Amino acid sequence: MAALGIAVVVSGSLFGLLVAAGGLGWGVVVRHRVAEAEARMTEWKSSRMCLGCTGTF
Image (cartoon, rainbow, N blue to C red):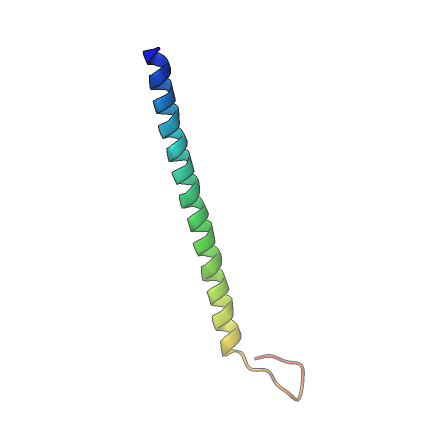
């Protein structure tokens, strides 16, 4: 019976660590995507459109 209790506690803590690692990984992915979007936004804000042609510079 004690072995069952130990197994439940250990599996629960491993599951908690797995959830925490997944959350950390998700946070890294989201932060990377936000950084990419901010870089694209900065590039877009610094561009100028020519009204005489279809060029952007």
